[in-house]
Structure formats: C-alpha cells, structure tokens
Image (cartoon, rainbow, N blue to C red; front, side, top):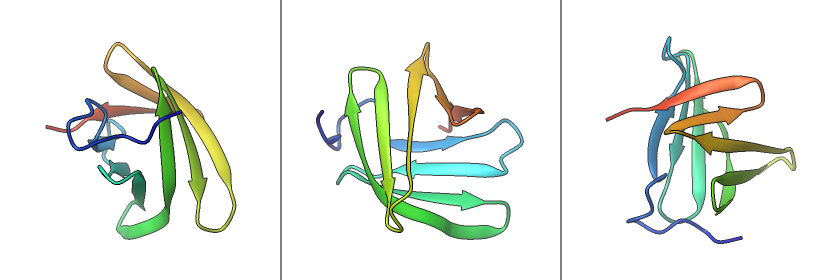
Length: 83
C-alpha cells in the first residue's frame, strides 16, 4: 500500500450526498472525518492501494473502502468528491 501524495487523485474532500459525513483525505496520509456539525469526529491515517483505501483511526478502529467510478464506498456510506 502507498500513502497518497499531494497530487494523488483521491486527496481532498469527500462527502455524502446530504453533506452530513465528510472525509478530508490529506496529502500526508492523514484523514479528518466530520459528522454533522461536529468537526474532527474521527482522525487517523489512511493508505491507498489502487482503488482500495484502508483507514486506521487514532483510537485503533479500522475500516476500508473502495473508489469506483469517482465515488467512495466506505462502511455502507457513499461519498462523492467535493470540488
């Protein structure tokens, strides 16, 4: 697996259609997840391998997801790239 770089196509903001859940994938391999009005609900690191992403939050929780046709499918959620 590789950590994303600033030019990696998946770096940036991803959010659900209603904007309630937002994932900021940072170029240094860290992420920041906001839920509703609560910013930084979860933070941790991530690695991307092809179109697959693995998350490890700072509390030890792990999750994963897949990018398919420009959409991130993660833990039963569908997140879209925010311009």
